[in-house]
Image 1: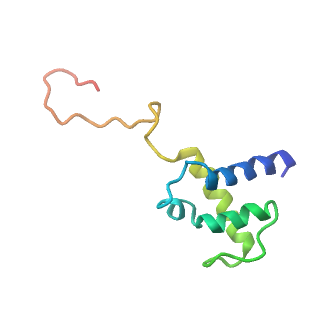
Image 2: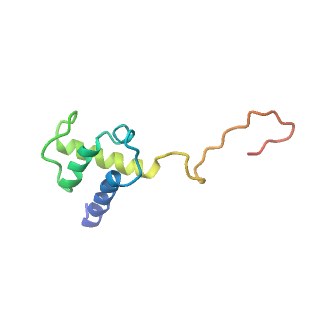
Image 3: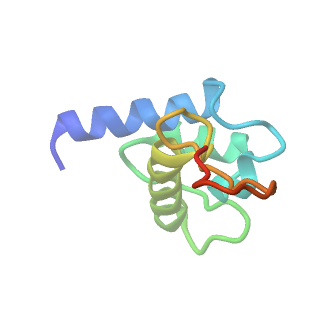
Length: 101
């Protein structure tokens, strides 16, 4: 991995903690780590943390999960909130001509 790649990932990890991207009550559910655990991973980056968060075999595993989940969640969460990706719901009212939404 290049230094530039490592820098981008470091910024994404940091923004997952400091930014307004993930609500406090959803952070662990979405990312698999608590904010303080993510902070430990960010502080050690690009090396894995020396201690593994609860539920992880080692720091490397936790780091892998953190990077994977942060990058995926930043790309696609919250789903359906931008006009370009908003899901159109079918109309529940009957119509005699083709319905458009």
